[in-house]
Structure formats: structure tokens, C-alpha cells
Length: 252
Length: 273
Image (cartoon, rainbow over all chains, first blue to last red; front, side, top):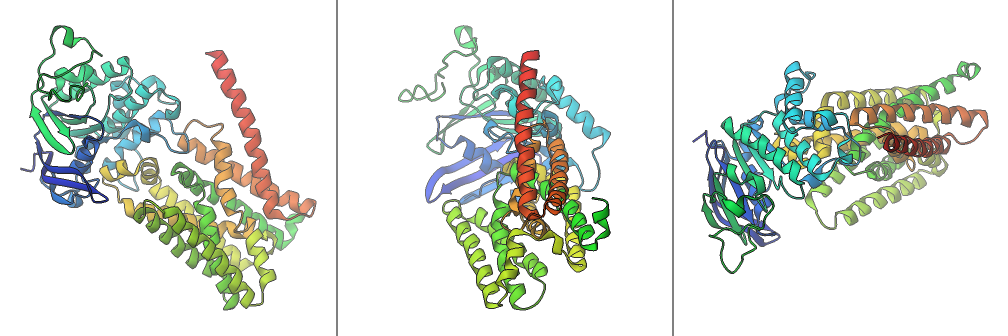
């Protein structure tokens, strides 16, 4: 049980009495690559926040590696990549400073950064192709580059499981390819990935299971079909055969 | 300048100016990063009630300002977390309550004139006792930032990421608020409670026109803070004007110069590339 990275049983979330998630049962096993999909407002981001214990459940139980989030101490096993909107703040920070902060769960308060810290940061920067921008302020980068910085921050912590909120949203094609290459390397190493996506694009072949949300409920769960022919072309308007006919744009 | 140092009160003022110049921008960088630039201003208003109580009870206004602004900082942080909407109204109530309470208590004590030196600063009247308190607080601020800086950086960057990294988010949030309160009391004697926030924010705003990273911003902001505080004190003694506003206006002048220089640097860079 303790090897299961994420599990949510009977998960329910309410904001101001409005129910956002209802009756969610979701278990993510090690090595899985799960895509959480659905239209805007279907509860995708809420679901991964609930998985991580970042928002309280009004009913049900969340567990990280078999432990409720409030008692979970092993946060270095998890790397969270938030939506890009949150990069920066009111003061400039270099790409390297932001990526290095991803080591925080592995560092102790009074000890300065170690050689292992610096090496992990270098590797993370190289993995997302941002090593040459390490000294630039993150605020000056393009959206796709900022997204890569946030992913590098999670990579630097060397976690076993990643949770990514819309890593492909508003990201140019080249950054999406870089992301896909990085992810496939992680998946090859047996790491677990849960990601929210509006469209999968070049990530599609990596996904082992997709979970489709509609109005706060899981309406579909299964293996995404392998894209073939016209469907394999990146950036095309993709409609899954199992998407309900009444909402053909659900996954597009 | 050198011969002025033979005066005890000026030596004390100079030391206080350096301490303020270091502590205020250092904390300010984290607070600006967290997009709470006016936090210092609010705590300054609340601290005034402490000053008033000190004057009224004939005990140390500095110590009581410390206690009241510390409690105020905790209250602000709790309000910020608990109330998503209407939080700014609650904060306004706290700020104006603090200001009104301070003026009222000072009035009751019959020492309203005294209040002016806390509202607008009177760095040249710093007593040896005050200086020890200010020095102790400034050291505490620097030590807190040195020990918790890495965690505070993550917190001020993104609270959810901090939580998902296992950081004690509530403790760190209170820590940064209370550290800001300590800084307000440090800066109170130099520039006064109404201008405290200026020394926490303006040097940071100036520094970030020229810097590319967080560490560099802290470093340069501290340099700007010390230059403004010491330079402002020197100018104010030289031409016999109030030191508090002189210090703040000097920091503003550095900010304007930094904006211009920053523009030039960026223009060069885009032309060069």
C-alpha cells in the first residue's frame, strides 16, 4: 500500500457550498502516466490539488504513499508543477534560483547547498534545455520557457512522482516537444506522472491512462487510443471516439 | 562628517541609520516578492497604538510598539488566510484602529508633541538604550532571514508549492509577518512610522530595475538602503532639515536614477542582440 503514490477514495470538494468534485475514486500506481482531462471548470486542477492534500476534502480520504497528507512527511518523493501563472512574484529571480529552490525538500535548514544540490540543478536545467538561460530572469522568458523552468524546479528535487497542472497550456510546439522528451525519459526510469491537460499533443504516446472529468465527476477512465495517421500529427483537433457525442470538444 | 562623529548623539544616529538601511530592505525584498508591499505600512499604523500606550504608561514606547506590532502582524496574517473576500476591509479596520488608538493614547498621556517624533522619526534623539534595542532587533532580523531565507523564498514565490514541498507554511507566514514587525520598530526611530514602509519597499524597487536575480536584488537593495539612510542623515544634519523625509526622498531619487539606468541597459542589450 505504501508504494501507491496517490489515492483518493470517495473524494469530495466544496467551495462555498458549491460542489466541485464528487465521488472521486482514483488510485495512481507507481510508473503510471495518468492524464486528467476535461473541459474548463470540470474540476481538473481541483482534483490534483485534492490528490496532494493542498485543499481540504469535504468528504472522502486522500493518501500519499499510504499516508494522509496532513501526516505525510516524505515530500521529497513528490514534485509539483503548478500552472505557469504563478512564476515569479514581485521581485526578479533567475532561472537558476527558481530551479534550485526545487531542492528545498531535500535540504536542511542550516546547511548550505551541497555539490549534490548543484549537480541536480544543472541536470534539471539541461533536461529541459534551459541551461543556457540559467542566469536570466525567469520573468523575461516566454510562456513555454517559463513552463520548462517550473518543470525543471520539480526535476531538481529528484522526486519519484510528478504532479503537473496543465504543463502544455499556452506552450509553443518546440517546448511541447522538449516536455515530451523529458517526460519520456522520466517514464523510462519508472517514475509516476499525473498531469492535467486540455490537449495531449506530443505527450499522447506516453499516457498509460486517461481520466476524463465532467462537472466534478469521473465520466471516463481508460487507455487512450494510440494516435494513427492524421491523428498523430501534432496540433490537430483531436476527438476521442469515447468522448460523448453531446460534447465533442471535450478533449479538443 | 568626521568631526560630526565626535557628537555622541550623531554617532548613535549613524549606527541606527546603518542598521535600518540593512534590515528594512532585506525584509522588504521578501515582502515585495510576496506582493504585500504595503504590509509594513499597515504594521506601522498598528505600532502607533503601542507607542501611545508606552507614552501613556510612562514605559518604553519602543518595547510596547514591538509587542503591539508583533501582535498586529500575527492578526494581519490570520486575517489574510481566513478571509478571502473582504480581507482588505478587515485590514483597513485594523490599520485605522491602530492609528486612532495611538493618537488617542498619546493625547491622554499629554505627550502629543512626543508622538510626532514617532510618526515622522527623530533619529538624532536615539538614546543609548534605544540603540541597544534597535541593534538587537536588526541582528534578529538578519539572522532570521539567513536561517529561513531559502524556505521564505519558496513561500513568497508560491504558497502551494511550499506546501507541496513539505514546508511549514503557516509558521513561515507568521515568521515573515513578525519579522516585518521587528523591522518596523527598527525603522521607526529613523524615518517614523508613517514612512517605515518606504524604506522596506523603495530600495527594493530601485534595486530590481538593475538586477536579474533574487539574491542580487537583496544585496543591491541593502546597499541602496544604507546609502539612503546614511546619506539622508548626513544631508539633514548639514542643511538642518528633518532626517526621516530626507532619507526617504533620497531613496526615491536613487529609484528614479535606477529606472533611467535600467532602461539604458535594456536598450543596449536589445540593440546588441
